[in-house]
Length: 435
Image 1 (cartoon, rainbow, N blue to C red):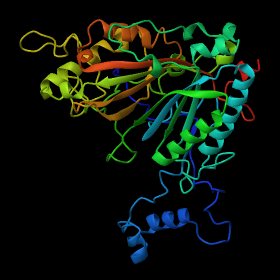
Image 2: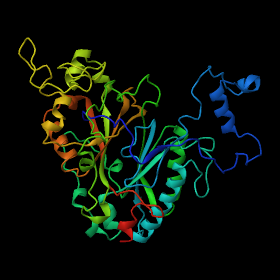
Image 3: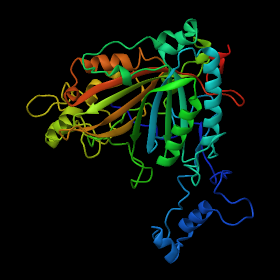
Image 4: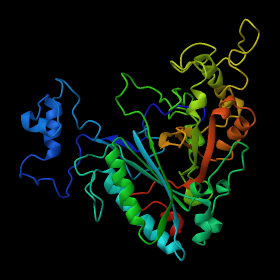
């Protein structure tokens, strides 16, 4: 975890649809054949009407007068085609799935190209709120796109399996070992990586299932993780997300308005290798939070570990969440107000040679251990133009003395090359696989 926040504005890859796209699968009435269930629900939410006694028997309740239309979140749509892949600079979504695949023995470049072609076609349709190209499960039949994004990446091992090792970027070299790592290799790395995000759980699962089915006989699931964030609209105003420790998490994220935003996040259009133009590198870490130990700390102790107030994310040196941290400020006893090992101090870009990365995480909860310890924490996802200049120097410094290290455990890790967005008529990775 680092002291950086989600972008305040979505990227050019995202656009709000005026209405939810029509679905053509079973269960929807055709034009002129009556009012569809989606239209009925949208109308009820928009006008404050209710389904009456019949609806009450199905579990429906009255919508308060002036309520937000039920279709508001469902109509949000991200664009599949663009300069960059979706799911990088888009706003945080309420539900996420991460899944890694390994190509099956005997599958190579040809099979990988066919798979990425299938995946891209499916992602394009699902992100538009349309059914999967074939064998749609109807899980998301009644929903709009719900800000669905699907992002694809390649792991280090992918290039050996497809005889493309000469095209493997140097930035994809394996991450160094860190002393705090307790990595499960079965849940780390992989040939192919897919990130799914949406503001509706059924829409997200629908995409996960469709892409897993598309893998067919070409690739098998290596690992899969599920995450969540606060739902859009749950707070009275836009706010930086909180993690499961209750802390505002990500105050100093790079923002699209920053003059060096693209330089920090994306490979230049004339970068090397050429197929990675406008792409990015993503580090994925499953970080378990030792919540039982964390929750034994007093509020003051928790704030000293982080270096920020828990209530509003402001630095302990004073001000608001966005106030610059005064690292030299001392208290009456002469000690630094922001402790020298505070997480927020250590992760500041100006304390790491300018190293910066865009964090776009999900929280997770995978139940409880037999002793009641929660298996919960953060699916840490960070984006940068070069992980050796972004993630690695920050993590090395955290490894040497971060106060938060006593309350987290890094249990899985992966690094993936995420190529630029696909142009209309292209599939993701085409310049690599057919170049």
